[in-house]
Image 1: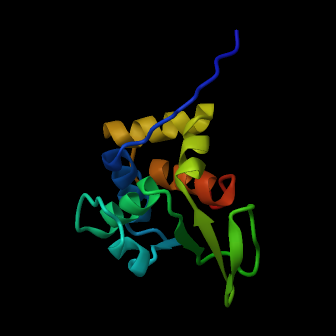
Image 2: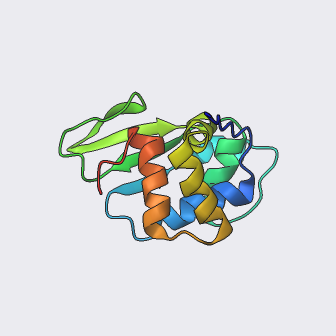
Length: 137
């Protein structure tokens, strides 16, 4: 029997949890959002950095993730350019939903959101969102 997983929604709290857990102390990833676009959002839910990232995603905008370990390599279709040796990617809510709709991605996201996962679990999920696969262990 084959089971298909389809995740159609990630809440603001879900995204904030995934992003804050994955980015806290990350050696390979840094995130940014367009502050001018953020000012135009009609609905925002918080003041911490990861809440602002979640606000942007839920409003249909993309966020930038910089891969500090790239060393000139690009790994996915989300790649937009290099900042020196660092690869820069743009990801949106659909990228998160796509990964969460895979068997492994669903398991990783569920564990992080429920409090069962840790930095490594969230990092694995974020690598799949940004890079298309786990590159850094």
